[in-house]
Image: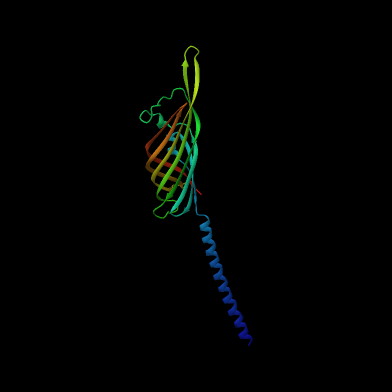
Length: 215
């Protein structure tokens, strides 16, 4: 009888130990899975250095909603849209007597990925909305006898709407994020030269690139 009780206790102890080990392994696997999910990078901060060609310093933030959709929004400071002072694109091509004032830029674009994102790598299609505002002053000498000078406030507001195709991904030694995109659309401009206001629209070619990091 004592031997039977002793063997029963041993069997129970072994069974309990095996059961406890199984629960511990299961919990470890679950915890590891949760940790892997928690460290998934869903945010990107980038510098849109291609906007330097439009006289703007712009930074973007992009949020990954799922493996097929991200949302990008950006803002920055504008100085001078150099393209607007090329005779091919504007009749106001002189840099004389111009004093640049800071303006602003905002942009927004939802990125759709036809194929599932591999981390942050993939091709995307997207509508792009961008609003740019430029401010500057010009001086006019109209009275040579008294050498009188007047300062005229000028501004240029541009609204861009385009459809773009792009590629993005991170890599290299520091896992630097890069993005390249191109597309076409239309831009609407309101130009103010003193009391004179001009409104016009033109076709738009968009070529851009960004660099940044994900976290």
